[in-house]
Image (cartoon, rainbow, N blue to C red; front, side, top):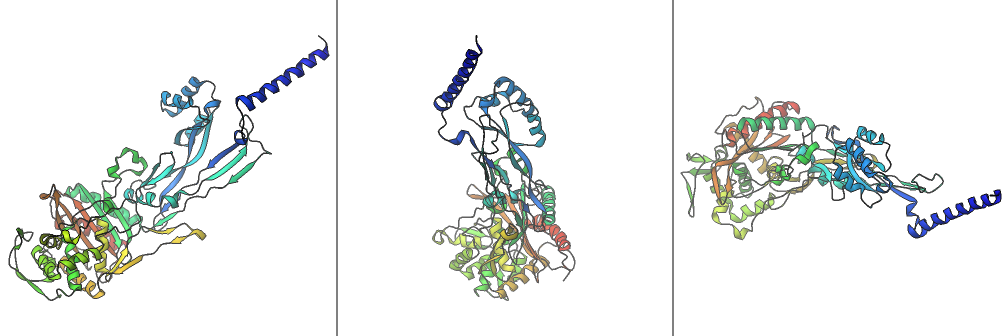
Length: 551
């Protein structure tokens, strides 16, 4: 064969190869746009971090990777699946199902660390890919589980905040993803002289809380010890600044592990301080007494003749110990926590005004606290109330509220009569993007004069109550105990109670207000013997921490 014929054959075969390739690209696998050449990658933003009021980290991020595969680039499925599963240990059947997909790209596993990524890359297999991600990390583990919530996945596999701060502020925390567009050749390699477009991602905004981490540690440690000591099923301690309603600490037990939230059922995720309803019992009495003082229905110097049980229709109301002292002052009604005395105060105030003040105190609506998952009790219409309902609500039974509603209302009594909206986040972002959040005054509920009067009565309730607690010497601490039976199937079970104490210090200028709740304590059903001692244990540490001098 001559050289000319050989050269002709070579050119002819090359020409045929080009024609075949063009037929494949334009007919068999047509390219209707530049989509097969222009590859778009998503640049994942970093989720905003969460800090306490002093800048201590409470939720941060660590580098992780999304592992994906490109099935069409995989030649030997069995070999690919076997070698990848040796690293990931996720099951060959599960991997094979993804490899057999007709998709160009499919996510396999999120949250890989650097070691896992490197191990997969070392396999030298075609069709492997990785996308930079960030994985949520909580330096203090579950110190503030109910406050923070957690970051899980939505239906598309993207990060999404659930419950608490992570859920409520998800839009601020999540940021905006960026886009990288680049021209690729047929083998998927970047074409340097081609299109290279990049839109940078915008990281999420950092949050700075009102929470003080050392105080959070104090109340959680004390709460855990209290649950063990008093053998209670559940418990919460909620601490606020009554002058602003910023939440300083909040802990409820049992809680969950935020790093391994998937090992817990949903019932653990709900924050009892904002989601669970309870009957407040005698801690509610100062609210009704303050309303009666405000309306001049009673006067601070008034007395009541505590003769014996009170009859309301077919119902008989007694004192908690069925003992009666005769002529007692309004202050003594609080000191001995007299139910019949409070029925008298409620009757003097009147049914319409009782209902009006229940609404003024905010028990008909949520507080609006910036935590995901808040619920609130249903305050039934006034027309649906019977005389016995107005009688029992005067001493905190027959009304269901949340702890956050209770502490918002009680703060009114000690801060000069003002109602504020409770809040957790005090600053969003930093620099030019910074947004400061301050306390929000909603309304004046009672006068400053009434507030001062009720504070003195609450001080006396602690100083001259039925039980002498281990109070720190030199300090004036005020508050009120509560013991409420738990309603079960339409009636109250006398063996099951919610024990509580709400108190504040110092009385002259309150720096903190704390609500302690223990559900079904076995050592004693009474708030005076369980929740109150726990409150004073917490108060002693807070007085030292806040450097509050004796009065």
